[in-house]
Length: 177
View 1 (tube, rainbow, N blue to C red):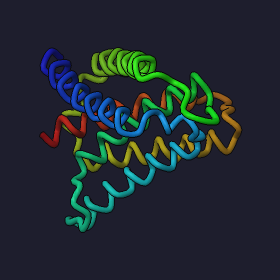
View 2: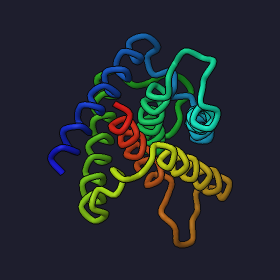
View 3: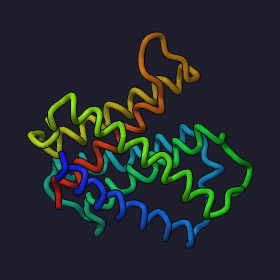
View 4: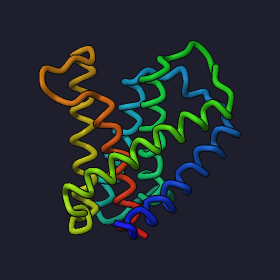
């Protein structure tokens, strides 16, 4: 478990670094995005990963590592949007966004530790393609919950699915390094 935590922290730091640099470039323009738009953005990234895995090659320069990083960061953005709601214009200072990012990163890491304990690090024996498929499944679940106006009868909510996608993406990045 210590190895996983160390690897998780290295990958998370890279994701956060990219997030912070993009915040400096673009600010928090993403604050106007509805949750469904964020879900679709993540879906595009996951679908591209799956396409590359199936076809065995890519025509666009960015490799799948960048797509998994995008899934981590867009999932954290979605969690922030769940908490704050959408805005009509960018309305958060960089330091506030960074604190929210760190909050949701810490929650995802805590969840990872608990699940890793219970599942015995089963993800280490999984293929990256299986992690991709699980991310796509989570996205389809989120879309269905969104279509149900956020209501579920017995299932976990949208936030749990975003947390799982963060962790599956980080696991994939660990396996790809």
